[in-house]
Length: 141
Image (cartoon, rainbow, N blue to C red; front, side):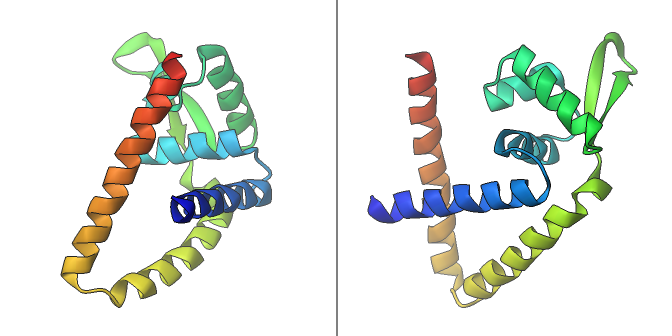
């Protein structure tokens, strides 16, 4: 359990460090990460994914738009909706940090055979599921 805690803490510290270099807070940086994964999304979808209130997500989107990380677009299929779109060019500075890390991780993984890589993937997926289950439980309290 201590190894999992240390890994989680190191991951959080990395996210905070990159967010700081991008002149963002950690929540805003995580919202960028969600948008990169989800693709263009409504504010409601982003709020649901992040577990932020609609008011809080509006503030996040306002800050990210002002900083040039996202743009709002009208939904061509529904005039009442606004789509939030990530702007990749603004993310180049953060990409530099993540690319360096990805190179190190790739070098580490290249030393593993396919069986070990499958076990690591299963392990990571299982831990993520456990973390999500317990986060959901805590949110519901």
